[in-house]
Length: 270
Length: 306
Image (cartoon, rainbow over all chains, first blue to last red; front, side):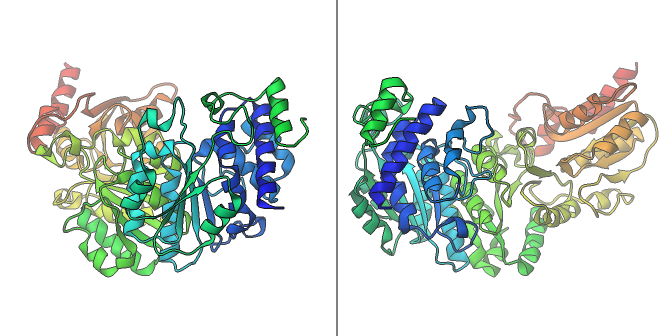
């Protein structure tokens, strides 16, 4: 499957999951679909067969509320059964492993549970430090929201990772410019995020977070410093009426909107 | 006490290459030996306890046993959510060590007094809590925290405390940290339990009251069967802690006793009673001001009798 094909499948699954579960954060998950697709489709050395191998690459979704996108990728890559996606949020009366905010408990391929912002990205930093300590050459990737960068702990980590020269660590900022209630700039202005990460001692690359080719080439390279990829994205990407509309941080797709969303993503509604 | 603990940690690290020590830029003169001997396993996280605890969790999840070390509330309350969501929920081998239990930092002020940590951490699943009373218990706590899977919290005094054995020849040698330690025999219908360095004050009370004294070096898990038996055998169980009595050691003992049917002891809790330790003074004067003394206990018990 191509990266673009996987991203499209992730988007369809995300819409289905939030539709079935009446769950929030559909737009947050759509925002990172291409990033997640590229990572799981060849950039990372991770598969159902090596999910416990100490030398595997590690992925942490620090913006845990977008977990649906990762579950969808895991289903497509064979870590979990596809039909299990229907149990997302535990809303349909069957047992579920797939909490809204991403859970690691019993879910192969998920390293840690997140949901409280500004935390996953710091644990991922610990994974990277462990790799250096033990002489293993795996890489660690974390996706952090731009609004999540309000959290001070993100910047504690940024100082630490640069100081300890963790060039095996890549943070991808999902720069969609929207957070819970308003734009990032109208909430707590983040300003020039690239300059900020650079000032903290990181290699920084700005890219189109929906261009799978660019994502792949940036995420595949070796670095001398920790790498921060500012992935410029559109919240709700792929569903016209969700794009850049703040309401889809919380609203779940139902009725005609659900049908239209699935149609735009080239699929058939349930 | 803290020197003995860190020295023992060094002994453990010598034979176990997965033992790491992370500090939050504190430990002047205490951690140098460890840092020099194990430079690749000593990490100063800077003044950033949230990141320290999170990175420790990441290191631990890759096979390490990581000790985080700082003063009082800094490695615990400052990063409480990281302790809960990351270290404890993931059952990671993160061992939190705090220095300056209770008001050991005296006139430094209330930011440096740890008087709620036991209550708060006790409420979180997957955490084992060690509260050694002296150097001897601290050394065994170092060994037990290494041997115990998952998150441990070790609450240490500041240093220079006398050992209970020096103060009372009868005090048992520490062998199993999870068991109550008999410090002094006694008679009568009152038994005293203490956790942490306030045990020295509890010893004075026990001597004045001719009462038996035990230290309880683990606040979680508590030796519940032992406490239940005491509740059957005595009229009053006194608890001593350098900590709030709400939800702490005395609260934990009360929970065990409250679960018993029929005749059982009442629990008298000595500690801070819903107050900040705001007096600016050396530790003994602070403790006196808030009534955490043998004298206050003896007075209260005699008033109760009359």
